[in-house]
Amino acid sequence: MKEFIIKHKFGVMLAISAIFTALPLIITELGFLQWISVIPAALVLLECIRDKEIRLKKMYGRGLVFFWIYYAVVLHWFFYMYPLDFAGLTNAASLVVVLVACLGLSFLQAVFSAFAFVLITAISRMKTVEKLPLLTPFVAAAVWTVAEWFQTVGWWGVPWGRLPLGQIDATLLVRSSAIFGSYFVTFIIIAVNFLLAIALKNTSIRKLGIALSISLFCLNLALGVVVTATYREDGEAVRVAAAQGNVSSSDKWSFDSLDNTKKIYADLTERAATDGAEIVVWPETALPYVLLSNESLCTYVSDLAKQNQVTILVSAFTEDDESGLLYNSLIEVRPDGSFGETVYSKQRLVPFGEFVPMRELIMFLIPPLANVGMLDDDLLAGSESLVINTESGNIGCGICFDSIYETLMLDSARNGAELIAISTNDSWFRDSAALDMHNSQSRLRAIETGRYIVRSANTGISSVIDPLGNVKEELGALECGYVVSTVHLRSNTTPYTVIGNAFVYLCMIFSAALLIVGFYQKLRNDKFINNC
Image 1 (cartoon, helix red, strand yellow):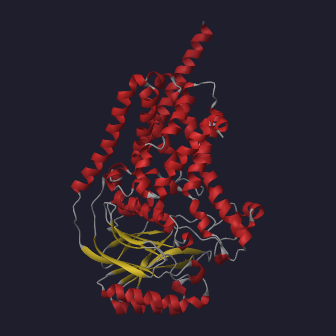
Image 2 (cartoon, rainbow, N blue to C red; image 1 turned 60 degrees about the vertical axis):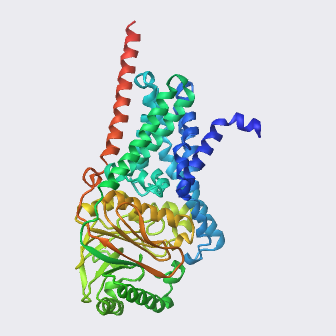
Image 3 (cartoon, rainbow, N blue to C red; image 1 turned 120 degrees about the vertical axis):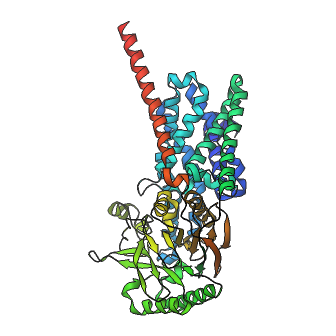
């Protein structure tokens, strides 16, 4: 064992670093680990930067090792989905699906993220950076930040494992997201780790490295304090509720469960209204039917809203007039029983759950994966972050997967949302850590947008979150009930609402500029040598 560790010390260091960096996303009480857990990986990178005999191709492999392990730990909860009997799969097919989901999705994320190791090494070997070794941590932080942002691009990118999620319970450390976005927190975490790694490796600049790392940590903390100190509870007060029927995916899709589902949500809505709720949000596809084409269901929801004098946001399917294909939508039912004209449709669909990318190839390679969804046809994706103008206020919307993509919630705030409602179905996660991880994404969105968020989940976690990322009310996993709270309709703008991901673009420009300067210097040097 000792010989193995010595022979593969870089791999061991990367594995340890990846595991301990991922753990705080699962157990947020361990958030402090992230401020030192990347150090082993940073030491490997620094050694490889110094040894120019190590080719960039090898650095890609090492990046692949780190990120594959990191994402596999983060996405471990896929195994809680076994068996997938609700999707009609056998135990053997279920095992194939969860293995492919956990290890395959982790690998897919790693394939792209691994280029971060290549770029960090390539840029840090440039003469400009070599002369200023304390520039390397900022190069690493910038490249890492861009790599994290890249996960929002394309269906293959799933930004589930963002570093700031590990700091969510130390909310002061993520409130800088209201100014620069959560990617800024990623930048600070990576820069601190690399500065400490350089301090360990280079005694001549040890004190300066430690001083800079402490300064960056304090800067981020200070920004969080400023956001907290300047926060004002303004805007009209409204009582909102999130209903949680605890109707799992294996139950709600069976026809004989409809009557039970209707009774549950009628009871929860009535109780929430009695508790003063003016707006009641139902979870994702609480009624898994094409609602507006079903007269009896329309009458049921309409009567419920009218009898209780509440606005109900119902998640159900809507149909595209031309293709006949379905959208996963959020529909307003007003206190007078009428249906609102604005219907929000989910913009970010879940791969293999709501649509199958590269369907023919997947059907050939892994047939069970193509059949894991509950629907025969792919859903259509919505194209706009529409705001529903209710009697109580303007409500921005998100459905499940939407909440992990910051620009969708950002668009809602820019379009006039005074409150954001998120309707989600997390019953696939059972009672795993994925429930908290998904709820934490909404906490980041609340900070970034400066909006209250009311989040309704089929089986948990349902919550009401304030604009500082605090959970005001929460109903845990596998419980039937509702949460209700007074929120404020806010029309203010956070700095992040104004600038968006400008910080990420600055990181791109910074990294690209160093690359261009480095190549230019290399070309000049090669030309000089040839002339000689």
